[in-house]
Length: 315
Image (cartoon, rainbow, N blue to C red; front, top):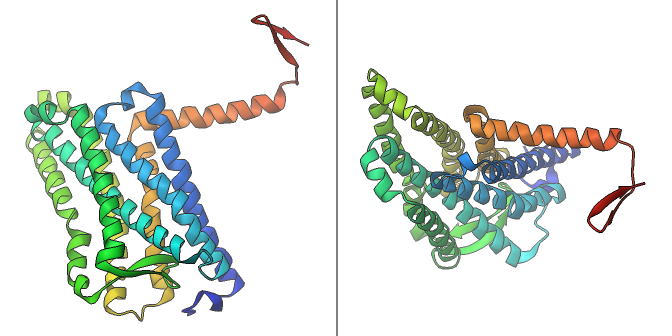
């Protein structure tokens, strides 16, 4: 197995670059579709969906700011962008990952109050509160990523195995890494466990089921996004911890961890499209509209159109 990127054969270079490029494109297009769906559909523009938009924006930025650099890293066999961009890439990748997971924490708490404590939901989760909490996550973890790179960490270096730039932590910081990685999972598990219990208790109550059917569906969709996210992040975190404790890690395993992490940015649109009817309908409308416009442009004859005094004259 090739430990250095330069030692790979052509087939390996092409396949690895192509796979990561596909993940990047799916992440960008999928999350742009999510943003477009919320913009077009008034039903999807409810304040609680601001967390979904925040998550989509973080995934779009991941696809635009860090994935292209890793694609180039894999394609060229080295980091061609210099030290400054390496620091930038490491910080952005780290802060966007934290923003994603803690936005999911907010989504879980939101669903918890909506389903388990509905009387308090309207009091707490007003539009202003949702905007402020979503914004605070961005501010806090952008600041935290910068501190992690320049204060807690000792350096940022391009890593041949992971095909990304990584923050190099000092030995004193290593014991707290597992806590930082796994801390956000606890409130998420707690909230969705309570939601599951509440739904199970009220299963026999027809009036409760009918009045909360939409909230339960939304909670199931968001829980699926959490399951998708965690199922990709958990093994990636384990691989990274193994790397920190034992740097002699197979390059293929490290690259697999990078693919898992970047794949978290492209799974959500598929889950929304599969489980949420409103998102599914908006996706279909957009894709059908694009196809119709494309066919119409090819089949319709060309006509010259002139606008004269607000009247249309065709030649």
